[in-house]
View 1 (tube, rainbow, N blue to C red):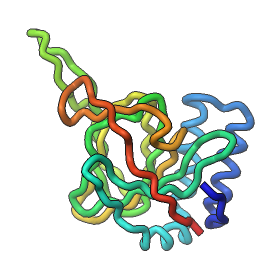
View 2: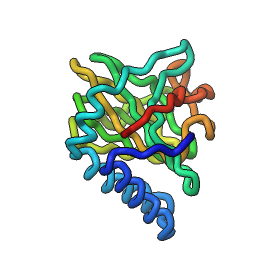
View 3: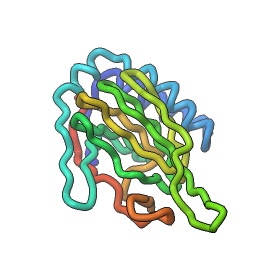
View 4: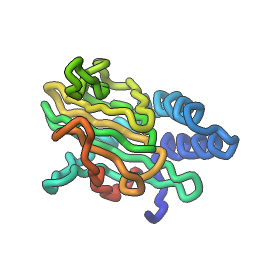
Length: 195
């Protein structure tokens, strides 16, 4: 995607993420640093004001829209926006080998983790293992292959997302129809100017 100037706080965030990558932070150390940086970015008044005008993404029958603000040409991380209408939810899914740092700018969501459990009779099922309530300024880190979903409350939610790589460049699964998951394409990436 063509590089356009972004809001000053987002430019600073990108520079700090690039510095963390250049310093050799890998895996968990990288996503934890990203979480610290994102927590600071979520408080920026200019970003919050800009986010009020972000459009709610569509759904084409297979996948939802994410706003694509930036994809790093050297380190591959991508910045996305996701807006849910009141009561909206994400399908139960994983992000394959990619990690994601998810922060809320507006609204409240219940974020849920799942794992595949096996009953005594050998039946496999998805089991909820954790549920947290998140609001503006909260950050959730989703490690690779972790099964999860987000459920919006009674107001619109606006999330700012950092992914280790752009959706569509890796394989991920959806778990709505079974515990083994089905390959899904991930969200549509809709270029959107963040400046």
